[in-house]
Length: 153
Image 1: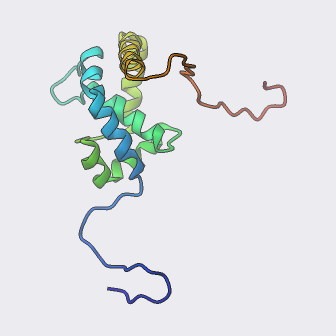
Image 2: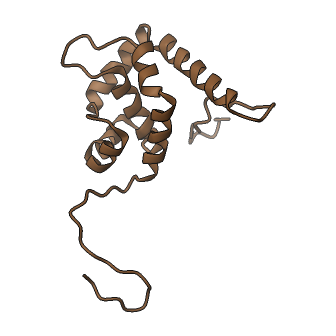
Image 3: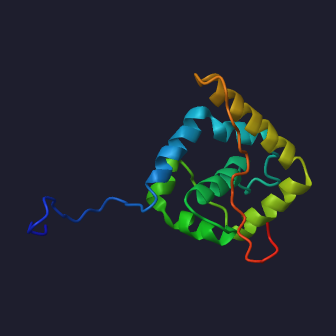
């Protein structure tokens, strides 16, 4: 225990698992409450082997990584290192960046995009049905693309 000096809080050590990404826990709870993992597993192709990750593990890893500020597949390392967060998110494992890159290429070349479109429609239907608003503006791809060229618009 550290003694209090000026500020009115106390410090103590703990054996509990901590995370620097606690805000993702609320988003993860929202995804689970909506049923997004089951939707992903139903709409996307199953793994080709018994040792493969479920579609929801791949997709949710990307979603949580992006919502946590990740910008590239290598940023999955940050998510993989957060054992406390993974327990809260009910993610048993996070694929490596190589495995996820391979999965993304397979999904883009096969039935993955149609499956994701199905999940997206289901999610929008659920959220819009629960909304009291009568007018909505949907910006599906609000990710900024930063270009450092003078000719970029």
